[in-house]
Image 1: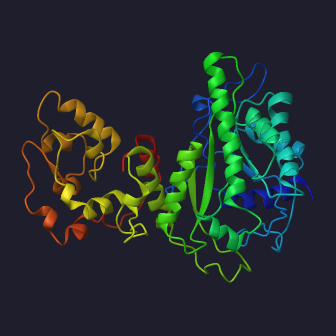
Image 2 (image 1 turned 90 degrees about the vertical axis):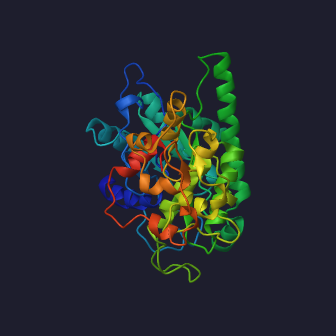
Length: 416
């Protein structure tokens, strides 16, 4: 099979992996080398549902010894198979880069022979690119759960980011659909990477010449909708991973039905808006101080598809509102629907000089119709608005055509 035919198979097989963001890398072009991951070197491109597309995204192989029922590449799947050699991936990366098609490489793989053998192949690609060809572009390698710590250490030496996929929201889900995998094994891999990242940071504080280790950190991916586990379980797992392993990102991927799938799998994909709500909730946990139980309480374990998580929480917590924007602390202002992190920062500066009014909020481009029931300003005090039984209906955003650039702006500013 020629390289082009392999590329058609293995690039298509890689589309199910969403964790390809290239943010956070600051690698400079080595002397005499090609490419860099700094400044304009990486071109970020986000689809409306948050996926990043800017890298040569391929699998080393779609052969796999595992039989994960939700995966198109499982060993029992009847799909065309292919396998690149490390040298072929290196040549493809350099050829695409020199044609200005890509800014870096995202390389994942099915597991062949063993986790260690697969990891050796992935590491060899990164090593050849860095050491032989002086490639300074971004490299994201998949960390194979169960690979030895020594191989992970080598991977982090050459790659900018590593990611070991947690796959499903609970260990019980994995036992049903992928009994050859476990949270414990993936967690051990994440723990080894986390320890190496922390060690490298400590060494570089003592000496700037100390080697870096996966400078863009690690991430993971979770498939949503393949099992009945609610959003509460998804967010709880994501929150624990953030806290234990300091992950840069958890990516949520809506389950995509596959040919001849297991009867325990749903016949239809979940609505993409569910994936979108999970990304919004994830953002609220990381940057707005929300706990998973606040966004998905026991009586509502699924995120609302009609309301964004912050508004849904505010409507369940009406007793906390209205909030006086001239007196409330930052933590409480961040919980007001319609006020993003940047707007709150500006409000805190403005109110040092004069009392904030609705006109000030309008100048900050705050959506007044959305925020008015929840705030008190110098010239506005809502009366009975929060008691309106139709408040949720009034605040629900009307259906509209999504913008290709709206999610990129939200990702940059952090405003919801």
